[in-house]
Length: 105
Image (tube, rainbow, N blue to C red; front, side):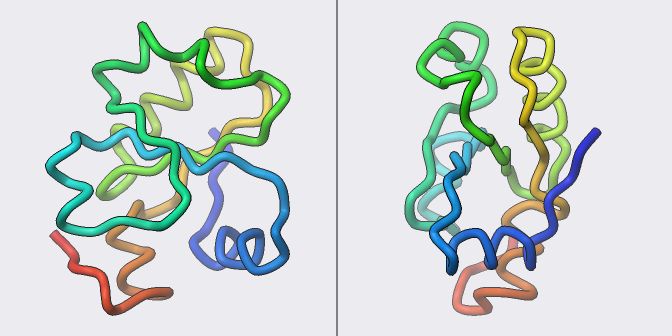
């Protein structure tokens, strides 16, 4: 499974590289810590909402630590998505290394 590090994601965002940051956490988790500009589809809804995404886009999935995001990558790949990766360490890693103003949970 392809992984994207938080440092690589930061670089993509700084350079305005085209990508979709797909947050698969539950809605209540967004209030704890959030990254601006995410597309939010909770993992449990992904099976019915994946068609909202384009197979042409680079998609980086994120969750709290990476487990649900990894499951999301596997699901999307099973639906024909080719350029999908998981944000290694999830939002907690982002908070730890990139944006310490965010809460880790």
